[in-house]
Amino acid sequence: MATLQASSFLRSSGTNANSSSSSRRRTNITAKINIPNIRTNKTSQLPMLISDQHEQFTINPIEELVLSPSRILIHDTNVDGLDPLVIEKLYVIKEAVADRVEMHRNIGEQRSQWNSMLLTSINGITLVAATMAAIAATSSGDSVLGLKMSSTMMYLAATGMLTIINTIQPSQLAEEQRNATRLFQDLYNQIEITLSIGHPSGIDVKEAMDRVLALDKAYPLPLLGHVMLEKFPSSVEPAVWWPQQSRKQTKSVNNNNWNGWNSKLEEEMKEIMGVLGRKDQEEYISLGNKALKLNKFLAISGPLLTGLAAIGSMFIESNSASHGSNWAAMLGIVGGALASVVNTIEHGGQVGMVFEMYRSNAGFFEYMKESIESNLMETEKERRENGEVFEMKVALKLGRSLSDLRNLASSSSSSLKEEFASKLF
Image 1: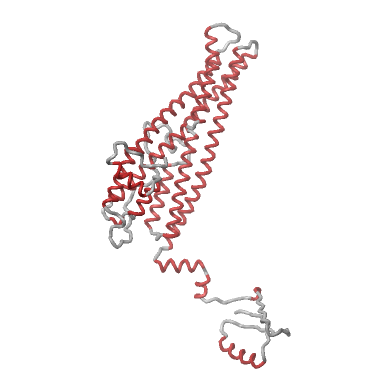
Image 2: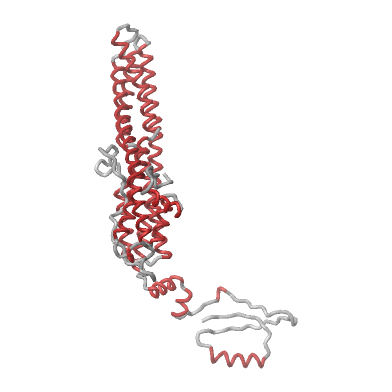
């Protein structure tokens, strides 16, 4: 029902005729017309005043479908053959991924601040302890005992703090969270693309869930021994943040049934996969081993030096010419200074972060190799990713143009000195 208020000039005969005809057509709408006494000229138009407060419509189901965006979405989904439950599940996963992106970003910033604050605090404690040891060695009287005790206690505190910080490696923890943030953001973007232009299915839901769980396992948040990533492994292994490559669903068949693949492209991908393993991945594993050895040495040296300095401070004697006392003072002073240098190199230089970066880069090349291999091992070309799209994706990930990528594949087998496949890092 609707109540319409309008003002117009109507002739009496026209009013009667219109009233009789509208009464026959009127089923759901009731009109109320008030005719005020308004003078207008020939060129003026009749004003139409509609009151929003009195506007009420009775909408039938067909009109509701047209006017409701949510009903239109469901209607289109049913027409396209999409499962609304699949779309709802993808939105649930998308929301969880967005939460993880924010969570890993915040924790990464927090652990980066840990590294800088602990570095400053420990270096300050160590240098103050060394200064007290030097004053104690050149002083006499009752104050010597207090200086010795204070220096020793501060060295012991620095030793305990260094042991903890060298075990958890805050700079490496921060790099792990930065990598997790980037990878979860990439997964979020892929889910958005699937929902926008793709044809979501149950396989897409399973793949998204598997990737979320694989990332959770690769970059854990707790600082517990059995959950946290090992900071000093016996050997460097590439980081793995993806689930096992599964067989892809059948794609829409192209006219030539090759899905963009041919023998030349297959040979090109085989050559690139070989270069990734021989050059890029091997190089980063080698660099990771060097960074790991350096980090182990620095992690052991820092607490050892502060511990020796604590022992030296304990046996300092004032104004003594004994040989042993001079060595005790030297140990207390020099040990603290060297400990500050070692701590600055390890945590100021973020050696743990460098190791994690090398490990992650090696994992990236392993992921590229597995992606290429999974497509080449699939005998049914309809199940592969489109060859032209896959070639472009590989070129972009390696920082190369398509022609540059093909030149790399052709020159890798003939050139004695191979170049690295990636130009990004």
